[in-house]
Image (tube, rainbow, N blue to C red; front, side, top):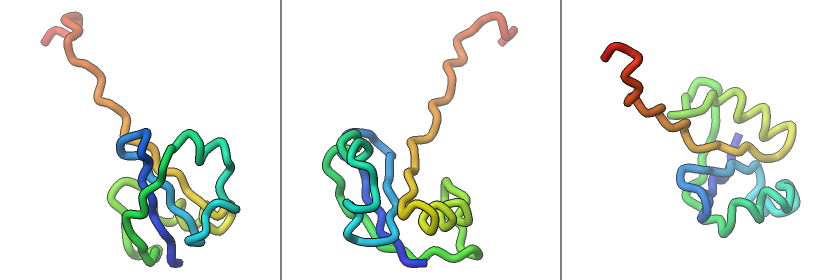
Length: 88
């Protein structure tokens, strides 16, 4: 499945995968507003045997088929390890 990937101008490491280059009709306006200006960073052919770095490729494909888009959120921040009750 061919898709286009855009990055958010408001949130670091937030990406929007869409199944059509004209994504505005697929993505809810509230989400587009929250992401700010989108910059196209690449086009990609997704296949179940081609893994993605941070997402399950099959889940991405399923969401693209079902909704027309997939939102990749930024990775969770590693919790601070300053809690001295750990014994470290």
